[in-house]
Structure formats: C-alpha cells, structure tokens
Image (cartoon, rainbow, N blue to C red; front, side, top):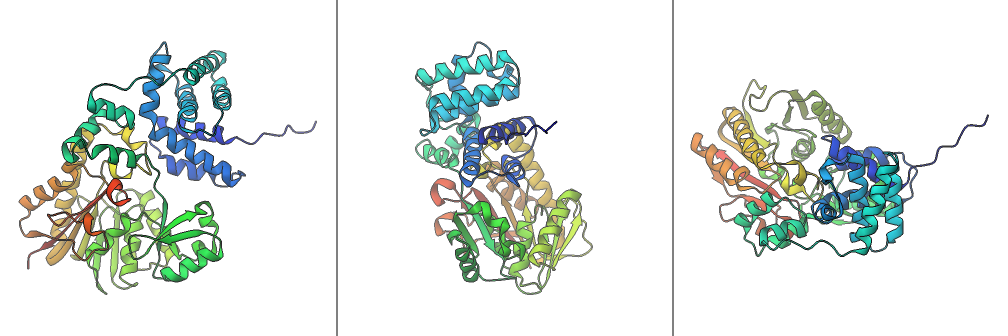
Length: 446
C-alpha cells in the first residue's frame, strides 16, 4: 500500500502549538518559535504570520481574556490549555488582525480545538461566533483597572508603574510594551567592522541600519535568513538587543583587563566584553548551570573570542582564586524591560517575585565585591525597571560596602536622556525605543 502523505502544519497550527507550550512550560516563546520554525518549509509570509500570531496573542492576552469572560459559562481558567489557546488565538485574529476574515479565524480555531473532542470544538465555535458579532466587553471604570485591561498588563504591575512613572505617562509605556521590538545584531569587531558587515548584509539583500550603540545594526527586513548567511558562520555578528549592547562598555575596559561576568549565560555580554578587549585580557564567564556554560563556550568559539574562559559556579560565591579588575553583575531579574520580546513574562511574574529577585541580586553583588581591589569597577545591570531591583539594590549594596562609590555613566553610548540625574543608565521603550534596562557603575576606593 502507498504511504499516506502527511499534511504540513499550517501557520495557525504551529502558533497554537507554541502558545500551549508557553502556557504549560517555563519555555519562552522566542526560543520555541526558533526551534519550531527551523527547517519548516513555510513561505516567508507564513513564518511572519506564525510569529505575529504568537507574539500578538501573548501581548494582548489580558484584553482578550477580558472579552472572553462574559462569553463563557465557565471560567476561562477551567478549560484545557489547548482549548483556551484556541479561543485566545481566534479572538486575537478577530480583534487585532483586520485582514483575516472572521469566518477564517473562527473555522481555524474550531479545527484546533477539535482534537480535544466535539464538545471543545462546539464551545470554541459558539464563543467565537458570538465574539465576532457582539461588541467588546466594556472596560472597567476604575482608571488603573481600565489601563490594565486596555493595554493588557496585570493590574498589580500597572499600579506599581503608576506610582513610579505617573498615570499620565503610563499609557505610552504600556503601549510600547505591546509593540514587538526589532531584531538587532552586534558587529563582532574581532572579525569585522560595522561598515563591512553592513555591506555584507546589503549584498545578501538584508535591509539594515545602524543602531544606538557603536556596534549595533537594526535589521529592517530579512531577519529570518540571518543564520543562513556566511557572515553568521564566520562569526561576524551576534544577536544582541540594542539596550543590552550599552552595558559592557560601562566597564571601561582597557587592554589586558581581567573581567568577571558573574551571571554570564547565554554569553552575549561576555563575548561583547571580549571584543572590546580586542582579544587581550581575560573574561571569566561564570554560570551555575552547565548547560549555560556550554552555550557561552559555543558562542565564544564561533565569534573567535578566545579570551573568554568559562566556569561553572554560583555567582553568590564566585569560583575565583584571585581578584579581577572589573566585574559585571547582569543579575537575574523580573525581566519587565523585555516585554516587547518576551510578552509572556507579564503573566508569569507575581508581586512577591520582585522582592525575592532583589534579595538575590544583592546577594550576588555581595559575593562579587571581595574580588575587586582598589580602583576596581563593578557594573550592576538588570533588564527591568522596578525600583526595588534598580536604585534600591544599589543603595542597599552601598550601605553594606561603603568602599564602593557610584560613578556617573557619562561617556557611555546611551542616549543622553537615558542617563538619570543620579548617574544611572535607564532605557525605556516609550522614551528611547529600546528595551528597559537599568545599570549602575561603581568603583572601589583606592
């Protein structure tokens, strides 16, 4: 008998699969998308649709759920994850993708739910048909609750940011978090220059422009083809966000410097520091997970960063035998500055996570401090902008280690408006078009 030919998955089927896995595991959408789309025979337009469906559904999940609630006879949380994902995916298309006909959005979502049984398919069909014909559920009257629903963020987070940034500025911040950030690469100056790399990209019909930092290139068209280029195989560039590229230069590295990157995985900033050293000196990249150190070593090899040495260890007790000249603590954090790239983070974090992470950040700073001698530079960085994980950590660290003084991050590659009155670096998506990062530079007294 001839073999039955298996049909290729549709963009909506792939998006649904990724959404279910994001909700039921700790995996990030961008990692799952990359793995799922690698080797998939989808046209560029279909690949772009998968990406938009996943990121859009996750970013607008709060508003989607607000509208789904009154249309259901049971709680949305009580449904099986695949059914819930089918409803969210369908409603996202109905409400946010004008070019998708309503019947197509409904029918596709019904098919996605059919694997859970006829009852699930019937429920999805009934709910989405009602959603297509009825107006959206009214927004709450309370101003904070209204902003939370309107811009699809957890209420507790909106309350926190209202206190920090003010209600007037808040809509711009929340809206910026829902716009997917661009693909950005960092020129590897160990192998090439930015001008030469731009020429290579142009020859491959990749549309690109210079970014905020000296090595940054923003990809405007053709991002999906980057890892297939000879420039990638030759180690001419690495994937790294614009705001992230502003951090390593704050170390003020000179030839021969010994640097500690205390929380180094996946290795972007360690490799950047190695490139700033021009291949001289030493970058000690520490991570507590062996899988993380393998990623660091693999990327360093591809980029020709032979001065990166990888160590397995807990950053609160760095596995060092001697002092270093500079240290980077790119600490684990709530990640709220990366919602443009990781929209699912807003639904995973809880209020208690902020205090827990702030305690961990301070513990890592305490562990690193003894390895910096007089004149040593310590850069603390996080990709979030909650005050407890920003200025408060620096204040608490300085109180416990008065030999360290805060230095203004003047002379950095950051936009002038990203340097605060206290001399810290703070980038915000709605002000600078960058991910939200905070960094402080401290120096040990001589």
